[in-house]
Amino acid sequence: MLRHVVEYATRKNVEAEKILSFALVTNLSLMDDERLEFLLGHRVQICTSLDGPADLHNRIRIFKNGNSHELLVGWMKKINDRYRDMGLDTNHYRVEALPTITRPSLARWKDIVDAFVAVGCRAIFLRKLDP
Image (cartoon, rainbow, N blue to C red; front, side, top):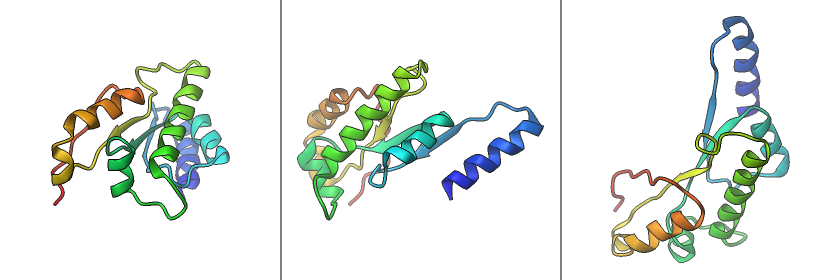
């Protein structure tokens, strides 16, 4: 579906001659190299969810087959490396993230901030507190 929307919008934009950009919010759980190449080829900006260090993130984002934090951080690094290798402005093209903050994680605010810094995030986007 995403591929169809991006390709359709790109075709329509040839006539409209507007500045067109795409952004995607994803947990990266279904990301693979083929999907990444498509997204990069269309200069899609990617945002994801990072809930803090591995123990906090994995408690909220449970994957049947493994460590969701490890998978996420690996893709974030790979995508950021590719943006840079493509010569894109890394002030504009950079995977940023937003956390889900729960009552138990509030006390670990410093660990959450440190986890964002460790993966190269330049901002933390906050939402309302979940129960």
